[in-house]
Image (cartoon, rainbow, N blue to C red):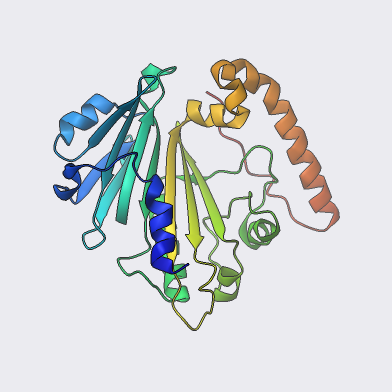
Length: 278
């Protein structure tokens, strides 16, 4: 698969449907966790596409053409950061939790306007994105079932266990960058919001002496939606009770993983503290 076809295939999830509004795009849009769909439409009436599907599920989307990529400002209270080179965004409501408004945003972007980027340039651009997020107050988040690792140890663990997120404060060298899994993940938390960045690259373009192709997805949810994702879809409707039962099991998984790693001489980041539960 060529990298262009690879990117097009990934972009099929950007928005449920296309619209003539895509040709009347603002360059920049601002979003936040649990944002009101009505306020979003009022602010961007000629740009945001609203699709309603049964049972009473609303989707909100914007797409930008490849030759005029957009910018998305992600706000949390008084803090915000900008993501450039955006191809599209998509948000959805859940009729079971109407007071939470848009429960999840997905943002699809490149690491630049170019289709192909030298691998070391991609590494540096990704580090700048992570630094911008951290400068806006976002902190590294480690899933509650996973060992508390940081720095190079988090990277080495993620290579063999891709579900583990990377430490956004750690700057990998080019050798480490080239060894990352096909989908490398960084996770953040700030106040009542959670942010997940997944960097996907074309595995057919891994020659470090030739340009690669990279695709970035950001997912933004509020703390209640994060909790529902922890318990899984089968327990979603009763997530608060399910979470109370699930948390001790997650801690048990973490404790076991950390004990195994300690026996191997791996240093656990015992200073890391999980964020509060909603």
